[in-house]
Image 1 (tube, rainbow, N blue to C red):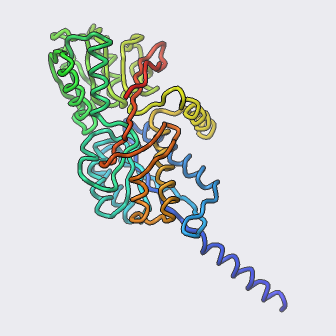
Image 2 (image 1 turned 30 degrees about the horizontal axis):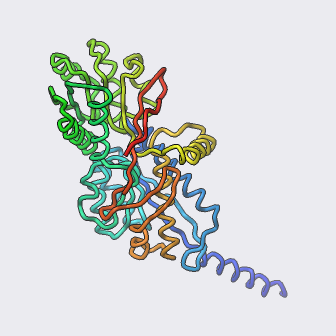
Length: 376
């Protein structure tokens, strides 16, 4: 019977060790179904990569060893499913949320997180309304549509020397928001807006709106929406003989656009801006992240994964500084963030927007995305 005391001792030590480990639940929401599921999976991969890296660091917060766990939800890029996913994460008592991908899901979900006192960092929602609601726990790690639309408007006038511009948007919070901001900037730069047309984020037939636009003979067409719609639109532009430049925000600025457009996209025809980007002194860090991501997931970064990764790291860093994983205790540290991530320096203003939001302008040549410039 001498083994009984040893067994009890072992059981006590094992139980004590487990009691000292604290599970920290990080919620993540993105569209994992629907037309832009490829972007949603890219986001989720970025979050998973960050959680895996954090768990190799053996972090201790509040005297306990921390284990991060990712709770992923699919919002299908729809507001209704987005709010349902948000409530599910609140009910699961997550310690923080990274997401959503789309402005149209991020904005309605943000009230649910705010009411529950749970901090939220969006890695990709760009509509200004998200951070204009006055929610103390709402942040983003990319530039907003005001910055993005302004940069594109100035580029259209100053570099492309466009005169007449037509605008199309998909009526989502993101698409309409970025189109509105581009329209403001274009007008301020002296461009003539010859027409504005509307579609939706599930559409595949654009002949009617493109025919109406063709009669206006624009130098440039701006589209507010995502790559899954932009690709077929470019094909139909070619079929109708429209040779105008085609411009959009980060929603169309993906490596998938050339395959979605087929033979509808000429070299240099598309100019887009990604809400983020690094200058030369930061490029090495981002390149190393992309290589590690490709090795881990056997696929290349699609678009937002680096920003998701940084968002998780920023949240974890705030928890460490506060020495607490409780939302109310680490939120003040999150607001004071000064974090050097793979996407550059992350600092928030009083609203939760990026203080120094950068933008990267791209075009496409030979089916590949090609960087034009990094700007602010």
